[in-house]
Amino acid sequence: MNLEKLNSIKEKTLPGLLERVKNDENFVVENDDIKYIDEVNGKQERIVLRNYGVIDPKSIDEYIARGGYFSLDKALNHMEPKEIIDVMIDSHLRGRGGAGFPTGKKWESARRVPGDEKYVVCNADEGDPGAYMDRSILEYDPHSVIEGMTIAGKAIGAHHGYVYVRAEYPNAVKALAHAIEEAKKYNLLGKDILGSGFDFDLQIRLGAGAFVCGEGTALLQSVEGNRGMPQAKVYRTSERGLFQKPTIINNVESLANVAQIIDKGADWFKSFGTVDSPGTKVFALVGKVKNAGLIEVPMGLTINEIVYDIGGGTPDGADIKAVQTGGPSGGCIPPGLFDTQVDFYSLSQIGSIMGSGGMVVMDENDCMVDIAKFFMKFTVDESCGKCTPCRVGNMRVLEILDRITLGESNMEEIDLLKELCDVIADTSLCGLGKEATNPVKSSLQYFGDEYIEHIRDNKCRARVCKDLLEYFITDKCIGCGKCKKSCPVDAITGEKRELHTIDQKICIKCNSCLEVCPVNAVVKI
Image (cartoon, rainbow, N blue to C red):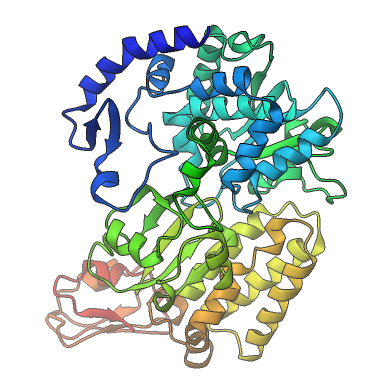
């Protein structure tokens, strides 16, 4: 394979690809280019998702028809490693896995470490509840990640790479494995790639689904065949990482940006987004929103624009109460701050983080104490148990939240909750523990009145915490007896055609009476 053959494949394949999509209402075809309609008429800008739904992910020819692997030829045959890194540094691409560390600086650090054995690792261990950005990229455009990793290999002097992907993503694993085999057949992986004299190969490593393995040092332990537990960061992984060799770890979305930056240049990439956070970000917009799904937007759009202009607001007209960004390590943002720009700096200023790209919309029917409890339970379940602050401290936080939702807490525990959150953040070993209490801290900051209502008034305004609810039968009751028959504990009494009553001491708040009542006479308050 060489540049001439790449051009030949593109010329042969592109007309058929254009013909296939030109009548699709989701796309606009202009000058042999394909764009999503939401890019032309909306606020989205697709860089990472440019091939999503456009090409057949099983066809390397269609990827090449869209310009695929031309950047690899440019990087391998026409650029020195330092030139590649200079472009990446100038682009200001920041890691899309959550921390936002500058990609070019990470590569430069690994390049400077002497040694012939270095590694490129792709972190595809996506574990945030509701997030599926990386999975979708691997399923629909796996060659973009392979190309990005190979360019990274040339930049730092690595000849081997690993993609660490969770085994719960069988379709992504299958698509990636097929793409790797195709790339090898086309001499785009392996020995003397594109006649450049550069060798690079890839392997897939499956993770067992532990959330903590998304942390860099734990991920490397797992790739080596050890238990995935975070390590004290005595050295940067770029100095001593996989098998104690210089290693760079980039997530899927970061790597999917690389080829287009090499092709179109740093200034092109910086034309999107903000000065601090250039480019775009892929989000999984989920929850109580009308237009849920994957979106890709320029950094700097506000939460309002994403939730209302792109997401369309709530499907049933309910008021939005909060948006949670950053997954279990993120924060809950109230509507009063929806004018905040979505970028690394702005989100950190209001107690949240970008994270890998989960964005969960919650409405008035969600209880913020219960939401905080949900994320804390997730973190407690996923903790590796290595360090005491995370293993014990987060469990104590969860126990307090449990007591609050059961109506068994007191106001003094609010102060204890705040203190625990600060101590855990200051003393945990890895990022999982340090940021685990962010949902609690942000919900206390912005929705503290709900905590107080739970404790002082034994009330859950969203009617989610069932132990704080009471079920009553109003005078709408027609005495049909359906509620009485459905009650599993015989808490309802009353004669036919007469008003029925519920014994609050017996009621287990199972909701069955409310569900079967034909005249909506049962209410919960």
